[in-house]
Structures are given as structure tokens and as C-alpha cells.
Length: 189
Ligand code: DGI
Ligand code: FE
Ligand code: FE
Ligand code: FE
Image (cartoon, rainbow, N blue to C red; front, top):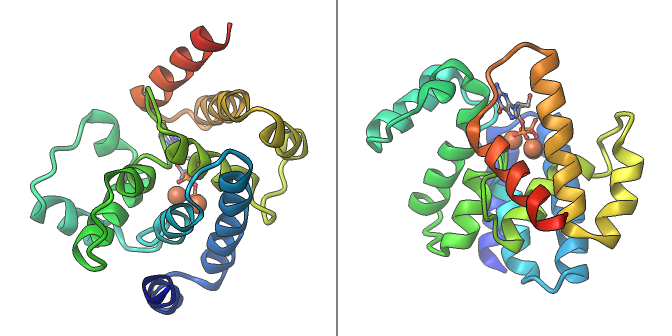
């Protein structure tokens, strides 16, 4: 589709080569998960392409977008600026690319923290971000296997890993991540 081509071209100019390669990995993993779990492949592709669009923006640039759109940031967002790029990418998706599908916009916006009651597409993007072929940390192999078997359990494991990581680096944990974990944990019990 034309939109997908356009985003790919623009993306090469706004993110680093490393980030571009990561994004293409997320596209690949999102497509596989979309097929596996019966989600719209085109929606998954667009959300994956856009998810880190603003990742290499400077803090000042990110804040310009946030302020201009009158978005109120909670305490954790103010303290942890690495959370901002998803919100800004969702804004750009809407304004620059006229993407109106709320599910796509939410998948982009919440890809870093997750949230309670994530849609299937949100889960796919959240998970694909961690298991894309370019990622190689200790637990990723197991997660790739689990991802093919059970979407919810794989997302739960990913949330657990993120929470452990955030604790290790002594940063504030966003409540969305905590709520997402509790919800899935209770549901899967
Ligand atoms: O953009 P990516 O590197 O592909 O991955 P991401 O958007 O999932 O994560 C971006 C960073 O945000 C990563 O270093 C982990 C961090 N992060 C995720 N959840 C939280 C968090 N940082 C804080 N402070 N709090 C969180 O809840
Ligand atoms: Fe990201
Ligand atoms: Fe992520
Ligand atoms: Fe990413």
C-alpha cells in the first residue's frame, strides 16, 4: 500500500540505521503474530512501522509535540522521558499520515508501557517489540517460543521482564505496566 511505502521512506530520514533495522524486525514479528492470532496484517504493519518513529527525537522536540497537543503528562512520564516517544509517534501517525484507526493509534501510543485491557493489536505490537529478530537478551528465545503458543502468557512474561528491568535501573515504573500485569495475571490464573 502507498501509505506503508511513504512511512518507510520517511522513517529512514527520521531514525538511525539501527532503529530502522529494529523497526523492520518489529514489522516482521508483528506480521507473524497477526497471522498466528488472526489480526489484520496491514494494521499490524502500520503500527509496527510507526511505533518508534519519534524514538530519536531530542527531548525538546518531543516536549514541543506534547505541549502543542495539550497533553498532560503524569509524574512518571515527566521523570522518565524514554516513555514519551510512543505518545509522540501516535500524534504524528494521526496528523501527518491521517491514520484514524484508534486501535492502530493505541498500539503505537502504548507500546512502551502496555496498559490494562490491551486489544489484540496492542498486545501484538507490545510483544513484537521485544521478540523481533534483532533482540538478543537472555530470555528472548523462550519468549519467541511462548509467543507462538499463547499471546497473553507471552505478553505477561514481557511485562514481568520490563518491570524487573525498570527496577534494576532504579527508574519509576509506569502504573500502566503494573495494571497490565495484574490484569493478565488474574485472567490467566
Ligand atoms: O523503543 P524501544 O527501545 O524499542 O523499546 P520500548 O519503547 O519498549 O522501551 C523504551 C525504554 O523505556 C526502554 O529502555 C525500557 C523503558 N521502559 C519501559 N517501561 C518503563 C520504562 N522506563 C520507565 N522508567 N518506566 C517504565 O514503566
Ligand atoms: Fe519504543
Ligand atoms: Fe517495547
Ligand atoms: Fe521498539
